[in-house]
Amino acid sequence: MNRSEKAAIIEAIKAKTEKASFAVLTDFKGMTVEELTKLRVNLRNAGGEYHVVKNTLGRIALTGGAHDAIKDKLHENSGVALGFEDPVAVAKMLSDFVKQSKLFKIRYASLEGKMMTAEQVDALAKLPGREQLLAQMLGTMNALPTNFVSLFANMIRSLLYALKGIEKQKSKASA
Image (cartoon, rainbow, N blue to C red; front, side, top):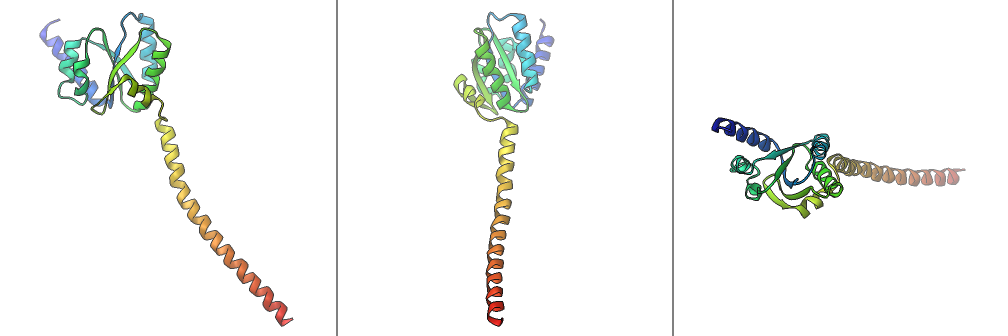
C-alpha cells in the first residue's frame, strides 16, 4: 500500500468518525466472515456501521478528532463500530452480540468525545431507546396541561354545585 492509498484510507476513516456520535473499539479475533457479516447487518439496522481498521491508520485518523480519547486503545485486531443516530440502539446491539459470540468483545468506546469502558457501554445499552425517551417526555409534557385543565374544571364544578344549592334554597324559601 503506497502513501496516497494510506492517506485516502485515513481521510475516509476520519470523515466517518467525525459524523458519528458514538465509536466503539472491539476485538473480533477468531471470528468468521459470516459472523462479521451478521454483525455488520445488525449494526446497519441499528443505525451504525462496523469497520476493521489498521491500528496505525486508525490512530492517525482519530487524532485530534471527536473520538481522540480512544485512539491509544487501538492494538491487536481492532474493529470500530460507529453509531450515527441513536447511541443506545448501537450499544444494545453490540451488547447483545457480545452475549451471542464468545469471540467478540467490547474494549472501549467514545460517546461524543468521552471515553467509556465496556461496562459503561453495557450500562448505556440498558437505558431506554430514543423513541421510548421521547414518548416519556411527551407524556410528561402532556400531563401538565391536562392536570391544569382538570384542576380548573373541578373548581368550576364546585362553584356550580354551590350555586345550584343556593338556587334550591331560594326556590324552597320562596315557595
